[in-house]
Image (cartoon, rainbow, N blue to C red; front, side, top):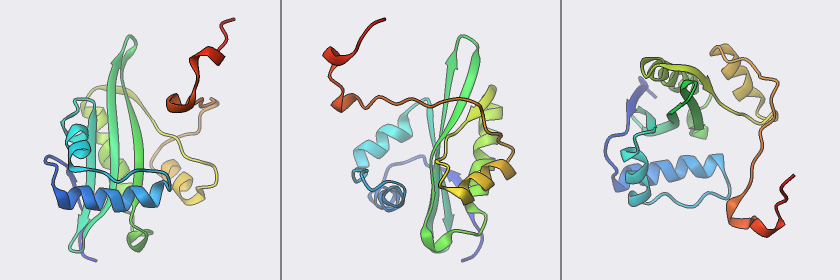
Length: 155
């Protein structure tokens, strides 16, 4: 497979959109294909950094780092970490994660968070090896496209 290179995506191209689509489909069965336009919007975002892992075989992994400022300081979040099935077990996700942590540190982030389903045992081991610790916290989600505001209650 050769040496792995971790780079920041700077330009949206058809080839990169296709590679990201292939990776995202391994992460989520409900994800829509990535268009060049949606990829450009992501790459141009001030809060998002798309890291790409490549080898001689092409794009083999990705990670999105989100950095944002809130009243208590700069925070960071890791999203959509995925390595192509054919390249798993070679330390690529660790390299992507390490790079994201360093970028967050350089941005002045006080913390960096991520979530991972308990069933993703190898991913959870990876994150712990990379220095992340589980938090005693619940994650809540509201799916906006399907939530009727009239059904929400104020207490």
